[in-house]
Image 1 (spheres, rainbow, N blue to C red):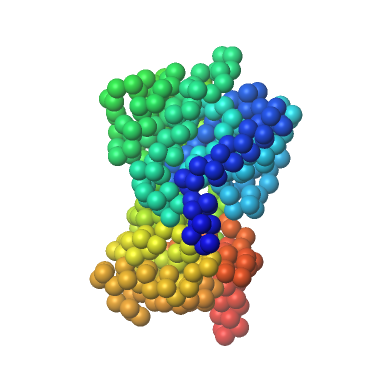
Image 2 (image 1 turned 120 degrees about the horizontal axis):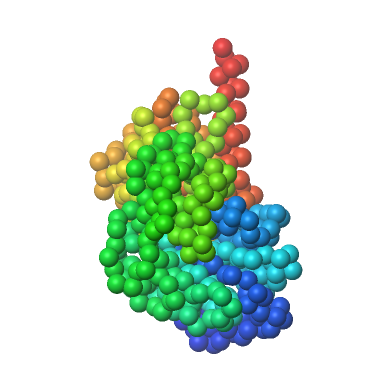
Length: 447
């Protein structure tokens, strides 16, 4: 019976896929195909989707348009914004169609949708006529669901494959946006039809089919901001972004390329980058007067951890700490790999529990520790195992020195952690603030 259930809920079960398609069709009919009255921008990829969606929406808003947005962290319909508490990157078909219909009612011109591989695989977005498709990057993730990188990549490709097949809207071309720095996937995504193809990246590409390119040079990274020179075919402009980290340069370029595709001037990109100073749970700095950095992030993949730690290394004066665990009931193969990445790129590591779901938390930690054992680090000297997440964070904060950076990846802005018995309330940012305040009070009382 258990095997039959697993077979039904697999990503490739034809009956289940047919049911998903039927639900999507019914949702489109019920809400009268609202995407046909909007310019729909879809952003997919492994890392950077949420930040790119947020920046894109803000740029278009600065250019004077009414904008709707749906992302992992939140929703927006013109001036109204609220948090996404569903734990889903892309909503189910009836929810997303209702959201699009509400955008139409409010008079939005654009809908910017973070589009996950799960949503593409399960046809949640079937019937939505996308006009712009953007890919950030593709690295290993969700392989417990997709089973292979080939299948994962092919599900991402569905956004581009269906782009030119969607409903044509008067005066709105079908445009694809590609990351030229992601060489492993660039050519594969470029093969799909589009009225116009735009590349973005740091290096100049001469790939066939690319009509224009958006680039950046003179990139200067700082702890609190990044300065860079944006270059489009018609303009170049120096901007300052308050989203620090080397990997955020890619996200800025992706959003700029989308804006360029809609004829938006770079001055609006500059204005948006001045305004967007925080993506909840994404490289979010927690400050309570301490003389070291504490940062919360949503990194979950090997590539995400590597980019995160490499960026923070450049911005850290002394020791770089990582406090993390891995999610249960998900791709097990990545756990020792992430452990090894942390062991190589950080100075101190504290392994704790994340969201174990139905798995034994100790087994998850053991797999992470297996990767750390393959590095130069020594147990109980350079890396530590403290199962309780709050205790692990407090341990790092107690031992941090001036000029250190502590990063706590994995949970981001989520409001709960999933265990076998259900969801337990948890707000990573508030927990860290409580710990910082408590230790400050203790220090003050002993003076």
